[in-house]
Length: 255
Image 1 (cartoon, rainbow, N blue to C red):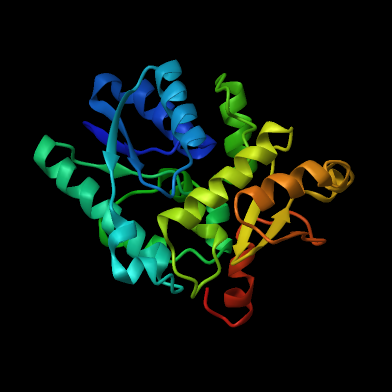
Image 2: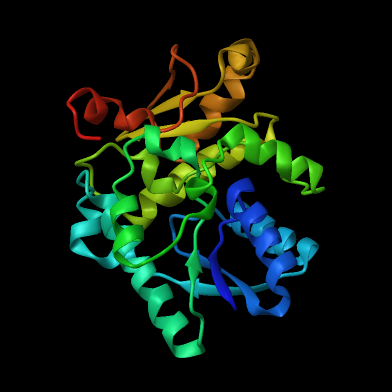
């Protein structure tokens, strides 16, 4: 490749990809992060810091997918609609600025989940080199650690919209509520977590080994969550699982 535009999020996958592209292409590699209300402010700041650490140019591009009726309706096509909208933005930018290739950080493990956004990736001609090379998440973390990337053990993340059950309308206020709830849990020491939003119910997912610590903090968590608008605060006894709101779709053969 003579140059490449990397769809970057600050997660370990896209950070490793950005680092490899920078090593191979130098200044002909550029990272782009898409900003929107679905991206927590903490994640954006960390992504900026990581790009600065590895030395790659970072462009920030604002997306308005939340204003699309077909996106805010939150059907099981939400991820596709979002990715299609965003990769069209990246394709336009690439064409206007002479970038021949767009890369994303999808890995081999992503093929095991319900990921309708992959269709948009293919339609827009985006290449997923880690997936093409059959790199698993564990292998990516191992390589990232060997290469000295500070986020090699960063917990997997996902956009805030993934906390809202399909069929429930996505609004900026709801996304802000979820972000505030998760930020509070991070501030008091939890690392791997999700706050699933079910109207006035917050369903907290943490790994089972963190259950006791969550219970020990139940009073301050309850107080904070009520302050930000939840009436009922629950702990999911199945524990943290990435993409748990996709489980019904997977069972019904929607993969």
